[in-house]
Image 1 (cartoon, rainbow, N blue to C red):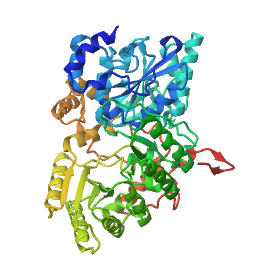
Image 2 (cartoon, rainbow, N blue to C red):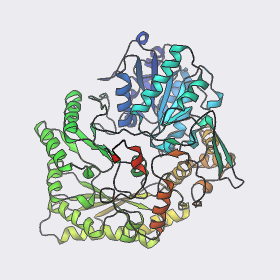
Image 3 (cartoon, rainbow, N blue to C red):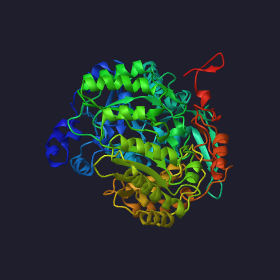
Image 4 (cartoon, rainbow, N blue to C red):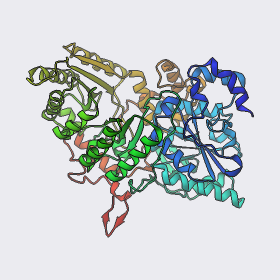
Length: 616
């Protein structure tokens, strides 16, 4: 089909036509006749969000370095363009070639957020494919998925042929090599390919696992078939300094969410915050050395022309050589007049020396995450910071010239009371009072922004067994928070209760939840994370029509011995360790960070060993 002829007349009828045309600086265009493998890298959200995602940039670069392979980008069309696509019979297409997706061998989705799942189904439908794997044809593309949400793949098991668990740089190329080999030898069938792919470490093929349930709806058994492994262990990159990283990024025509060069500093986190899924599924910590970071920073900025560079990690100030790294990168960015964004700062290692470096970067404001308003709750979640450190950090910031401080908190945490929530407002007030108590303070007025997320229990964390607060309890706690604010110098924002509860339903869903996702999509649910598109009532109807209840997945407390839907996916952290951490949380006991003392989570087994010693 000639997509271009149908596309051009539509572009002036939609918002932001630059989302749909491709042709940007540094995109990769290849001769169709010279490649034997094509993959569509799909991000199930808008162009400006997907173009900001680092993981797809990395895979795009690695795949396209192979002269026989061609990776293209695909993003979810916004509702105005989708309406025109369906009306005019325009299929979903790759931005580089403008070819429809049925011309690709593999279609891959990045799963970053549970509320994007209906977009996955919608994009498959726009490509002319049945979203349900069992109804697709032999010659249809293989549908794969990866990303953090793949650590519980079960809600999408009925739609995805193959999941890549963990970090994708190596497992993606191994899967592609298998596909090309079977095609070249003439032995390819989709069924045989999936069976052979399941033998590759880190690949999960849901059709090779039979799931049974007890009468109460809990999982009774997970039985592998055709030689599939009983547990699928995630893949990790052993040496972050040696792995390929893009030397350039595609430069968009329009502004994107993170319109800057992004430098990945490290993967993993040493902290062990019990609510944080990323902190567990990306273990163990692996950092790039400063030489590599400086070289990559210069290559990215020089090749793209970006005037801002962001350092990306879960906790940048925990880099083992943070001072040397920042000194060298800031020297370069200062010389080239490039702005430097330094997110993920910790209050317990924010020194005056680091303050001096940050001050050279920007003066707009600083962001920290105390997460809870009092020490008991910070101990429950293992935040491992106390109020003196929070106040010390704010003092350093105020005396350094900052007046805008943003603080991230969560409400509806396990064991939390209404008084614990009110303590968030009280802590914010003490920070305002601190500002006025300082002799050396800026003349500009202070502003403390308090952002409060609703806690959502996630798989592979110590809180994976916990029942999420109900709608009424969440609303009551949000009212208590507002009641605790006494100063106009404090501004408060919080997450929507409906999207938070739906996220909780899907995050810990089992395979049966796929029917509800399909029904919700059929009812018109897409872009569920966008308030103007979210239809909560339609979702509740879909869940009940599937014979399920949201309470079973969200607010139900699991038994510690229950088989969880994701137990056959091994992210490296043992279930015994998570149970121990949950028991400590109930006693408000903390666990020291990995750098101070190994807590025995099990992730060390993923690292290569030499003479019995772990090698980072």
